[in-house]
Length: 73
View (cartoon, rainbow, N blue to C red):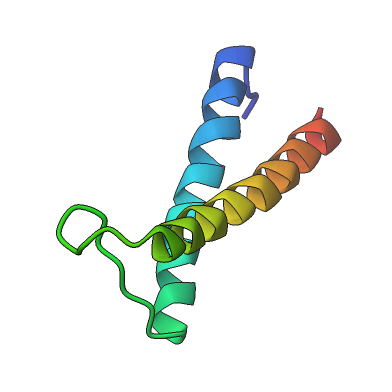
């Protein structure tokens, strides 16, 4: 199965997004960290933790997807 350029751009975004979403859910469950942005009171520290974990996982998984796509072509 051959991957064209439009599918590559979708894969480069969707796979890291899903990996970061589910990975952050697992990490927060392991550490019993709960923060619901829209229902809990505003806490800047919890918001930064939430965004940082998601961002780091997204970055790492996008590097991995980029490596595998380059290696395949």
